[in-house]
Amino acid sequence: MANFFKNIFTKNSKLNVDQLIVKKTIISFFFFFVLMGAAFWSWKWLRHQRSIAEGTRKPLRSILNVNESIFNGLVSDNHLTKEYPVSKAANPARVNGSLGLKTPFDPATWQMYVLRKNGDTLKLKLDDIKKLPKTEVIFNFKCIEGWSQVTYWGGVKFSDFIKAYNLGDEATLKYVGLSTPDKQYYVGIDMPSALHPQTLLCYELNGKPLPMDQGYPLRLIIPIKYGIKSLKRIGTMYFADQRPRDYWYEKGYDYFAGL
Ligand SMILES: Nc1nc2c(c(=O)[nH]1)N[C@H]1C(S)=C(S)[C@@H](COP(=O)(O)O)O[C@H]1N2
Ligand SMILES: [Mo]
Image (cartoon, rainbow, N blue to C red; front, side, top):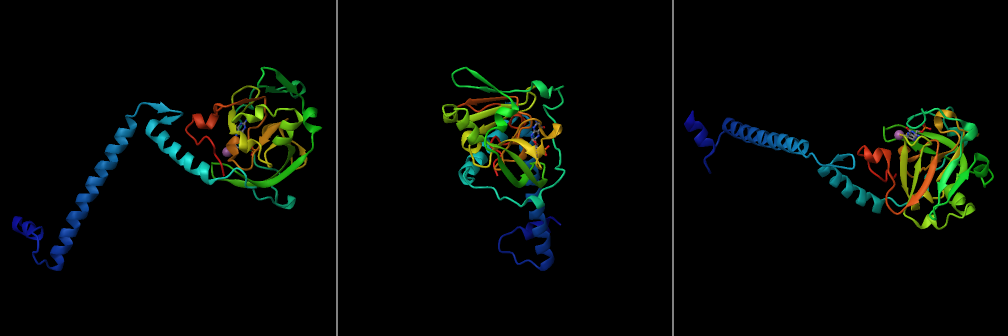
């Protein structure tokens, strides 16, 4: 027996088919166990990385950061998302996510607080938004959970809103931060994406006022990003050069969530 093994692992020895099969099997198992061991060890190592960076273990966040820099270069903020005819739009549209919508809310007293660079706060009512030119967008809304559907929205282009309320100074900063009135849900959007021509401060769905669970009275619709960024029920808007807090980023997702 010992001789048999010695023989099949001796260089240049002539092997018959059976011996060859045994040899290859032994080699395969050897590598199988070595790689299994390596995978297990890496997993143990990762689990012991106690340091958390923005919602996930540090080594994973470093990988995500590399991915992010690659995709940021690849995915341009200037491309237009494909639009569809109204007949293709889902009605009713699916409701997904209710973070920040569960706190008792009085539509009569709602205002959007816009924090200006100079420290002032603009307080806007829905009519202040509605009197600006209206834009509609019908696009395939995509959620990171894996579903998508064509939906039909109406509102004011974010860029029109910036012009109308003289927020040009604010728009020179790198990010916009939005949060619900109760601050339970919040997102950060890079300025080029916010100013994209299909990004809306949206008050209509399928030609009617937004339903309560879809962000009444005003939400963001940003077709060039995954659904997580389309915050429902805006309470506060602010501008910054540092990344605003972002709910799903803090849970370990990609900050830009671009499409
Ligand atoms: N306030 C708030 N906005 C939110 C969410 C949420 O939980 N709370 N979920 C987001 C996610 S993950 C998606 S996919 C869309 C869903 O929008 P819809 O309910 O109109 O389909 O809203 C986004 N905006
Ligand atoms: Mo989503």
